[in-house]
Length: 456
Image (cartoon, rainbow, N blue to C red):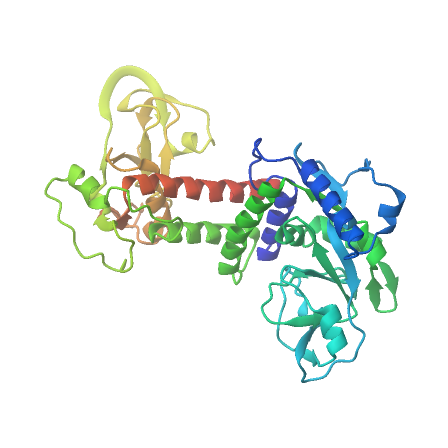
């Protein structure tokens, strides 16, 4: 599996109301549809758009049966013709290599909802320029192509003036987010619909405007459309960063997680708040004699951040020794859920919700949180993180360095954690409140990635 499937899964979650949470304070989509209906009526009355066949037949809000899939309560289903001003075929005029304006053709429509401006042709036909000029946020639908790619759709962002050719249909949305509509029209649901409704001919397939008008669209509240688009932008940016990644989806998601962590510790995942207490004040509470040093290879950290070695933030210790009390042995197999609990009558006592770090074995550097009281497993040390730091932030730093720790173990017969290397890890320290915000942002991304993995 690759980034294409990851992108499709995120699109799938988005159009089902599973990518961002619903807000009960949002105006329901049904109210939005009523506004669109009123606006279309006004435009028809003023002669700016034509009345569709559906508009002639009925003015009632239809009830649809056999809907494609379930959506949240505040969403509604409608047909594409309900939410657009027009579905207009492009020019049939022959283009040339030079001219006044670019003519977009089916080859300029990518399979990821964007427009490729290479290999352009041009027109100087003034009538065509007036009739077929694109406006920002118009969508272009490829009505004739191969069976696989008929229905390709992209959004025009006014990157340069353009008109469009006859194998394309211009879609002009009305009062809804064009980017959200583009999201729907690049989803697996939509691709499946195209395959079902296309008409096949020799070496090509076709979907005409009448069929296109009947496409069922899941509509969220307008504000939720905005949140979906913003979240999609984040995910698509991350996917683009790792688009050259090879291997299966697990590898791609691992790369995405690493990139998220890398952005986080460089201060690029979330905005800074100038009202936050600088990190140096936090570090002086840890060590009153603390003096800032050179930030090493972290040369462009945000103002208010600093860098310290891991040993200033945490220590590796053992639990208190106890005898004559029966407790569960917190060894690695038990903590991984691979073995039932075994008990000991003596050992190094660890309370529930403590952190244990593997210091022996191939996975040295892996951290576990203890679910219950028990005795420290023989391959562990207790990881004690200073109370002035956000624990989860420090754990994310350790997680980012897992590969380095794994590759630099010491010992021959039994590999051990390179404690010297561990203590020397450079840790970029943001203000405490920013640490909290970073952790929240990371968790949000990771939950979505884990949801994608689980749902595949």
